[in-house]
Image (tube, rainbow, N blue to C red; front, side, top):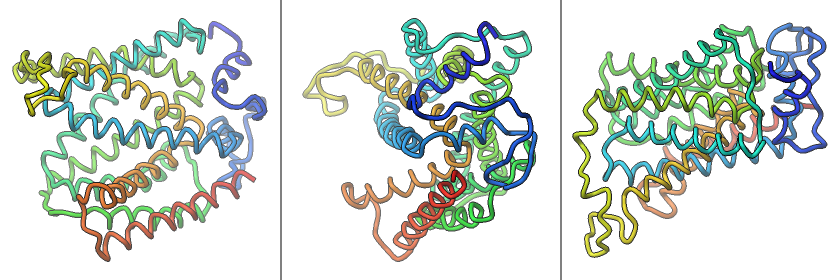
Amino acid sequence: MSYSKQEDGEVAMKLLPESSPRLSTSSTVADDLEANNKEAIDHTAVVLEYQTPAGVKYAWLCALLVFGMLLTVHNKFILEKFPCPWLLTGIHSIFSGIGTFILLKLGYFKLSKLSHRDHLVLIAYSVLFSVNIFFSNYSLSLVSLAFFQIIRNTSPIFTVLLERLLFSRSYHLATYIALVPIVLGAGLTASGDFHFTVFGLIISVIGVLLGVLKIIVTNRLMTGSLALPSLELIYRMSIYASIQTIVIGVYAGELSNLDPSTLWRTDANDESTFPVTSTAFSLLGNGLLALLLNISSFQANKVAGSLAITVWGNVRQTLTLILGILFLGDFNLNIQTVSGIVLVVVGCAFYSKTELDSKR
């Protein structure tokens, strides 16, 4: 590294309160606070998760929730005028790269001196990032939205399985129990036509596995031996991801889907376009939202852990349903949805209590 490990640790913890305890990495054997046993692996990630104040964790998770929902709604609007999902992902990566470059110049983080092997790891990570997007979009085209949500809701289960398989990390029994109502409840909130094929099911499961693997690898790159600050990881990943997604978008023929007149039309009398502002200006706002989402997502992953991120995904689906019922009238309130909402709320409360007990 281009600077000392102590300085790197300070940069990694920069977004935490000054009173929060620093990581202690002097011993390679430490208690896994979740498994209650001695393990020589995963020490840094576990210590960071449980030395981070609960208020900081929930602040980043709430930021992730807010920006995630805003970007989802904005993407739906943008894709009607800019029907190029791969190019839109490339724009997200470009804005994330530019934004973190500005933060780099302002001194919010420093670039680490990486070896050729480290660069290859980051390239492989960016490929995983792009492939995950492809399988997510592809599986959604093969199965119904309701079935897609059901499969996605199993992410917490795949998270604990992959962490056990890849890193021999186990959780407390209470954590496993808390996942049951969260997964079942989120599944009950999924409504609509449940249709799928065997091939669609396989692709959907692969998509979930890749999504979970991306979350876990993201966490390891920030808490493992490489120990990259979250902003640096976003900066480096964005460079590779933007090139990949734009090349794929051009190869897929998305440029032919563009109507240049739509990008700059500002006729307020035309109901097919957003009044006053242009689609190009909306893309600017969309890119800024993607930057904020990436920062909150990576930092939340770092301080809260992979499992918390996947659990939070189920919470976001349930909250979206509640907001849709209250303000949009998009969903019907019935016994199934009410039962699902109650299960998720109870499961999250139990999960939070378990996490606090583990921290103590």
